[in-house]
Image 1: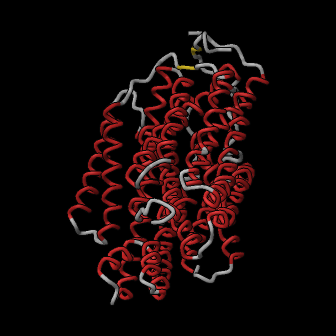
Image 2 (image 1 turned 90 degrees about the horizontal axis):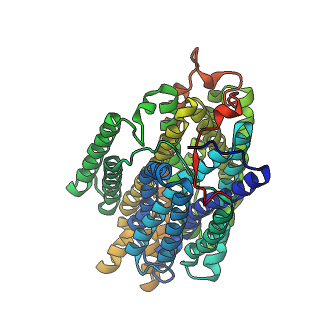
Length: 534
């Protein structure tokens, strides 16, 4: 074990640029898929995917991402964070090619799960290398700069996807990942040392197995409810019950492990645990409302992918602006007084989807999503930074693993529940309009509004297409109410968890200020492979 010399500032900046490319890759992919959902549902231009398959195409990625991320951190400690980061990029590129040429929805779901594995290997290694590279105040600056990759990805993703879908086949939205990976791999090979911890964490095989199977079973049951339009069937409630039991077992196993990859004890702390629950509920709501918005703009409103991408741009702009605005406000005011009202406003914008219709002026939609992005950004950035800062420095890595896992879990459940509510309400709303429709066409029309529109065109029944649009709008309105209530629940949890106490670091005058330890305290000891340090 050696203490590495400080890297030259120019090399630090180049390493930061490479790491931002890696982060940009993940955020681009997340936003690109949401724009492609309507096309994937199309029987002629896409894969004829039904809502459940689209939920899995999104959820399988997030499921693998959520459950493998903390294991990837332990792999980086053992084999070197650069090694794991490179492996993640290779897996991501290979599975992107697989997704681009998937022959059906089942292949796409499997490829998306593999992409989630790649992302899970990329994210912890990316953050670990950043933390090893920078020290003292420069570290906070680097984290802030790196976070802008999320805003760039959110802004560029929908527009890029819209352009590709308007000019190429749907697989191009995945194939575009490959050149980005090549650029990142070249930068890593030239610049990044292979940092690794002198005390490797043990691999947590039992925890990984229980978390994956538990979340998969829970998500399957929730999505299955939307397919059969019932909560009382055995194939719905049984997987949900099994998932809950397996996740409870996962928590018990982690509590008994001496060095857990996911430490549930951190969630027992009021501030850290409550704040993470609030963020999980927020991500639940954001993921669900994004799923709705994709079908609303391209399906019900008839926008092209490019038009839908441009219409979604204010969300990304708002989120990009919201993070620094929130950070500035929490330097002057208590975090609770900034984040809780912002989360309430974000919840209300999600509930406002209950007032959107087929003829709502576009300018009103743009204002709505701009406010939504701004307020979500004001919550996510400052609250995440404050939660990690509330822990001792030696627990920051474990805290980051918990926070990322909870956020991704919220996304998994959000896409499952949000899509299921939409499917159940849509089926019930479309049924009265199916009288006289042939049985085979009736079954397809009940699956989704996309299927109903194609059936209506085939049997020359335009009233069925109008009924499908009306049924979808009704389903979106009902779902919006539930999503708003979930997000408001997150705001209530945030108010409770961030209430001031005598020792609360989050409610002081400067709640997220940089720790004032000297650089030699902030910079941990590490090992660097001699052949990879340039």
